[in-house]
Length: 490
Ligand code: GAP
Image 1 (spheres, rainbow, N blue to C red):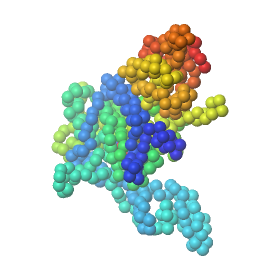
Image 2: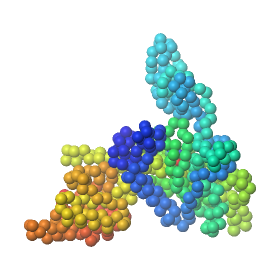
Image 3: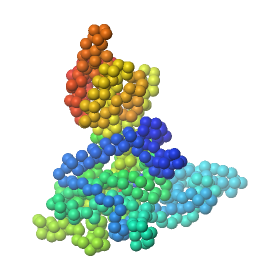
Image 4: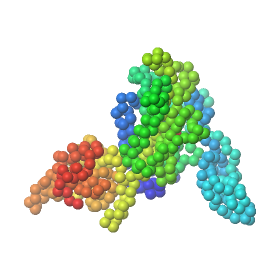
């Protein structure tokens, strides 16, 4: 994780928030390359799940909502974590996580000797279990008390109770309260889904592990509404669609590069299910911190629509034409964190290898994710004609993709820099491209394309670049391009 954090800072992906003031804990700013990567993740998610599907529509609801939304949803009463405080150093911990780390113990049975005891185990000398702070090892921990994770805020200029509301802790509720608006305005028939990407806020007791758990983050959520009275392929519709979404979600992460061995599914035990869920399965990823949740796919039943109907007094039902009856749809909810997805893609793409005796760091991003798709590099920055041609190529290609021009180092170094930020292709403009009148050499109008993963090169006419990149960045294979444009130098 430290390697990724340092790469992210050095190469403009992610910075500590308010760093010049000493930083704000658990808040991170996405730099020029980070914002491109994040936009790419959101763009392909929206394209695959909204644009391409006839049964999905999008929404962008506001972050601040009517306070009763959070009463109805159960967040005011149930969105809590058990918290314990250290009476000595005043640090706070999630009670259910305290036993997951080793603890420091000054054992009375051995005249106060200090031991580090493995997670969840008692002291082998005195048999005592952790009652002391996992950080300072001295202070007693208080009894657990419930701590609500929602950030409170006040609407309007006067901080009075009547104006109290919350920053949304999930984007989902904005979808539920708009169910009828969307269904009516878009004339939707079940099953159909509403997707939303947006910020969510949780006052986590123990944020950390870089962008894995933060207090401000982004979610990509789908609420997929199904008719619980229907059956599909012999199964109740909600169970059928739940399975479908689990399979689709796993396939989506695989398609954009996460390796099979780093992905797994984990079913929630009955006693850990959220208050609204009939069944939940998490897609877990093998993060640098170990296997952890990347996204959840829950069957929320009709809980949310019924709650909002009850609290608002508005019917949130669907008229089933076939059965001539009103039903409250069931909801399948695939919910992923943008920041966690970004961390997973980053971790999976990161590779170190040795090339001709030197270490090469490369981010093997799927081309659709790469923050920069093409880098245009002049071989000699002193030659005006080479520089001009390189700029012209950048200008042409940048109408389709994010393309950069760089002449701040020698070519070998420029290639390494682009490898390190995951740019799939570099275009090099050299003397042959523009010709050399002093030597009587004419221009061949071709440039060298270098493939990040194989480091092979192909010589391609400038005029063919848009077509070639349309092919390569759209999933075409490098070997096909390399054989179509021979004359490559290695
Ligand atoms: N609407 C359902 C819901 O919000 P969740 O499991 O609490 O479910 C969904 O959150 C996803 O949001 C998680 O799988 C994770 O990717 C992301 N997420 C949740 N809390 C987060 C946090 N504190 N920091 C970063 N991402 C978070």
